[in-house]
Length: 118
Image (cartoon, rainbow, N blue to C red; front, side, top):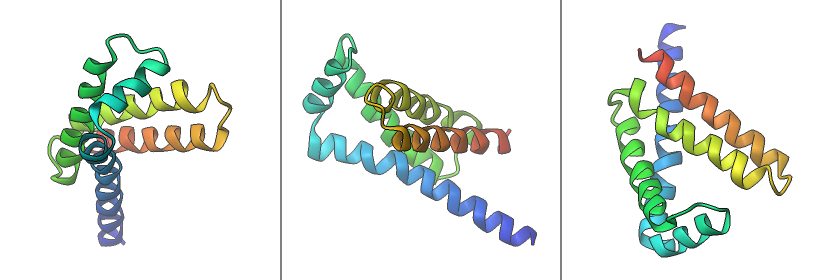
């Protein structure tokens, strides 16, 4: 049973790493930082181009670190914040309850990943 637990934890970690890495790469190479900045500006972020680059870099670097199983007690915390902010600033204002709950569930998975690796 312990081997199954380790397998499931690894699958969860890999999935959570991809949840950050893939959107970060898409934002960098497909959507573009300028469009990310426009979106952030539309939801009220000041100096949105700065925060767009912070968001993109965080998604890519944290995603890679989580995939590499590197210092998860620290690298899982920025994605937690990103998911909570997305839930509160994007999903909640437009009453997208399923999206809001999904972001919160993912955030709690990142917290669990951090807690399990302390």
